[in-house]
Length: 277
Ligand code: KIV
Ligand code: NA
Figure 1: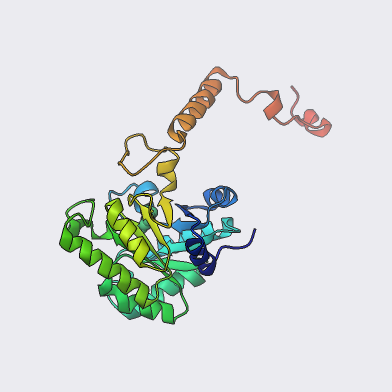
Figure 2: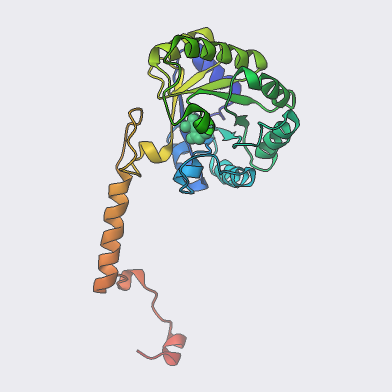
């Protein structure tokens, strides 16, 4: 299996083959998801929520993104690895954006970076691309703008917003973005944008007409029974599996059933002299 590149991803759009993307935050999950056939692994700033326990992505720092990116990159053989630029790492100035994007590549081992925003970030995208760092855009429900949006609300439902989103998508493509994540928008609008762009559009809560799909790995694996937004489908019940396994382990420890002889080391002759039975 050849390494996935930004060029092979564009080819997948051209031949109408869906792109499979999923988040990963550590080497073990990256290894499993890579071996399972992921095309793209995203170190999402969603780690602020699912790893760190915050209620938004806003507290995530560059150092944390670099740390998790490096772990994911080490666990990945085939998939393309893309890392999120966290809140305030690219909004202040184009210079800071390029510097921080560079850190995700050189220290984090990622193959590209992702940032949230439309036409207003075209110059930033252009500058990062000029530094030979591929950029994935992210439009629609952009979690770093939670306060501006007034919550995690579906975007592009009214005519003006929809028109603006189409414009933003075209601006990102023109600025040199190699792909676009479209989050939390009506499926009809996602279809229009997907058809208008020649770069791959990867949807989350954006319906079936996108060129690919992305989900947070903990969501599709069913790690949190209390988080069930409309766009998430659970393909496993890891919350149940982990709970069951842990309960059996704790029971066996309390009953003295674990560890048994099979899971214990036997003393050697020499040791037996020192520590008789
Ligand atoms: O941070 C994240 O996990 C993301 C995806 C949901 C697209 O940005
Ligand atoms: Na993100």
